[in-house]
Image (cartoon, rainbow over all chains, first blue to last red; front, side, top):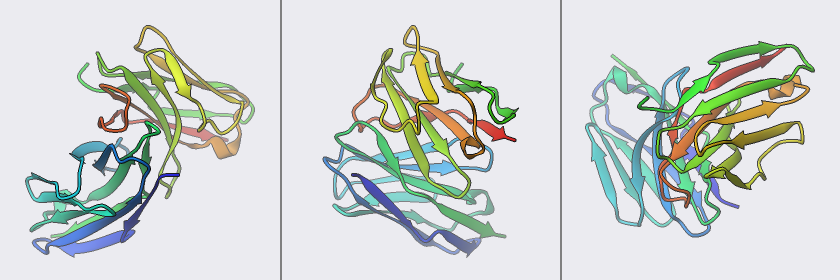
Length: 109
Length: 115
């Protein structure tokens, strides 16, 4: 069974203080690793797909990286508007995405 | 519309009543998924559709839950004889194709409260 574990559960940063979120996974036949952002009362918003170890994707202050066992979401010089829950998911050979419980990020001004 | 649309956005029902939740996926998306999100929990897979067919119903919690999709478009998730433990946000998502490598695009969910 595919499994995703995210850490930490919650992270509080000061504006401008860079950090990383971790996503550890086990999956049968990785088809893709996905990062989402979820704001309160909203559905998850797609950010990145990573397909193979060594791949990196960037979007504004966010950069996602992938190894064979984990993925990191690096946040550089965060702003208060980056505050959200960040979800990691893996897609394997069983065609469904398995999600982690997420990391609640709070960026204080 | 440009995104996945779900209705109603909120539903309050009494224990024992039936409810029907609706999802309009992104036009042209073959695959459609239903997930459940309980407070403080991860997204729980319920069912997915490839076209109008549901190859994997393994996530449906009980026989009180059913789903259908028609015209490779709209899907409905029906919960019969609702129980308090059914209270959650029900999220629908669509993607271009089934296969685990295609990102899901989510609606904003239906928040179901069973009293």
